[in-house]
Image (tube, rainbow, N blue to C red; front, side):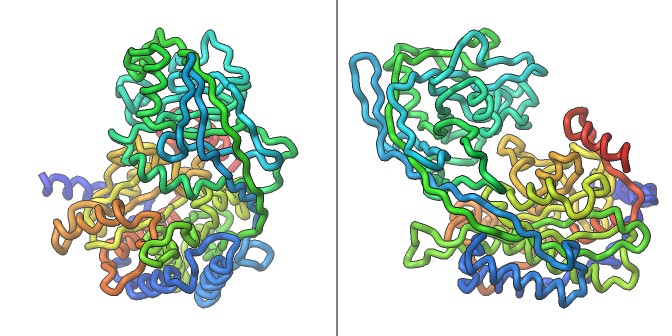
Length: 549
């Protein structure tokens, strides 16, 4: 079977001449793992203080990137500067320590983090929630294309709605797009729907078992880093719910039981005959927040195209991380972010070096875009996508790099966007030249498609690639390779233990960078204008861009 597979892709490489797919010897030695490791070691050092936007850690980070871009002779594209500054408003919630619930003649006191999480993004006076009715609204989704309306026949004005996590496809693959999360799965969409109907607040029921890959203890940790970030000028009036939050499964079941609802609430919510459930309960609590404004910077350098410089391919990675933790571990409070995402930043810097030294420059321009505030909600990528320095309709594709695993080089890599665009042919053919296989996201229900810096470009119709090696080592011990990946996800991700250490395995990081180099070079030297395979909003936007191109 393996021989058939490689024969097929050998044929594919020959047949797509317009993509100028290169052979392994062209690129396999160009990426220098020592360079990448040196960048990671520097950027993830304690001196950089966790690279939080708006801190001295940012100043050191963006200076380091600019120095490398200058070393390589990259061109600045923002009035002679590598920087693209923008303003961030940081809203720090001050959550309630308890929530009082009146249900029938009973008064119950629930505790923050143990039972629930709640925050407000209102910026002035404290928000008092007093005797607001609770309504279970199913998924909180109105999706005409799926003939779905969870709000049918109910007025939720001034009430607090409770919704299930994600969309129906997560619980039953015959609904919506199955385990492939739709836009309706995301909390921001649910909050906007509830706000448009006058709801006071929204709770999501957090299921700490099943396919989400999360658990309530991890939610408790993330809740301590739950500041809200908005780019640009704030509206005079907060255009959102009074509050939002999460309920534990245990608290949800207790409320349903005490209200006399003994049925399976998930099964009911999946029924076309679902009707919202008024719990006969009222909640009271007080929340507030604090506001801080600061300026941060994207860093962007360019290798100018030799034939069609107005067209561009963009490499992205976010330089930022979470700064200083409020919960030190063994005296260590610096969230160094070695894998997430000093690794991606280092890979893009090294890719910029290789492009700058090519004797023959690419036909299209190549942008090396190190974004700020990804961890704050993809704000840097969103800012550029809304205020691009090169036209979006001339942007061919975006290649994202976010958290490459420090392990042995992996033969199999997941491309989160595989199956969504017609970039697949050039991506797969490029991968085979370096001995790789590209597979689609095996856990789309987690929502990685929408969770990194490629996505703001996707929302403008630009096809993307985000591929990370993660299975079947080309060399090294398979058990050890997978142990390192699992250990990172379970004990280091977004914790003070995500640090550089001597003996950092660079094989997989180097191979990920080599793949990105090969596929980006092939796109930059092709005539292709990739598009979306599925009909929908992204394809409509891309078709519109291509019509004016």
